[in-house]
Length: 230
Image (cartoon, rainbow, N blue to C red; front, side, top):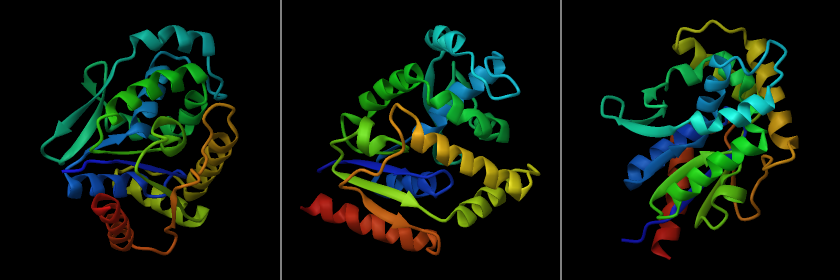
């Protein structure tokens, strides 16, 4: 059976991961959350005190520490999802913390960090049968992916979703703080020198500000079936 690579890019809190997981499960593909990889490196940097309270990254220290970072994904049969592990330890919950979200763009814009993770992501995606989401999947990591999506939504819709997600996890973060964080991440992701957030020319754009998960999933599955049947 034909097995393709599906790249899903988009803004923070635009629903990339939810849809990517759904597609991977429906197609019996591997799902790779590249955002979790950058979050895990950020968690490592925070633990090593390589980021100060002013969001300044010790770049030299970060680069020297990269060989000590080993990332893997481990399937959790209880959740039915692949979860990120940092140096052999499952850190899926820790990487979703607000402090990690606040600092991840500071770490991910470092070229040496991106180079290390892009190499790993390309190796995973080469064989096909993978759904990968992130910021530069369709443009940098898997530029030859047979199917590409670009997810977007209004800042209001994205902020409310992220705020609700944090609340479900028992984290009391003010909505204004969540909105500020998303706006800052958008700015950094879109203006960084290396691998900025950019819509691939051949990507299918989905503005899901007013779309349900089911509507998005049905549309994306229809696109996937068209490619698979071509």
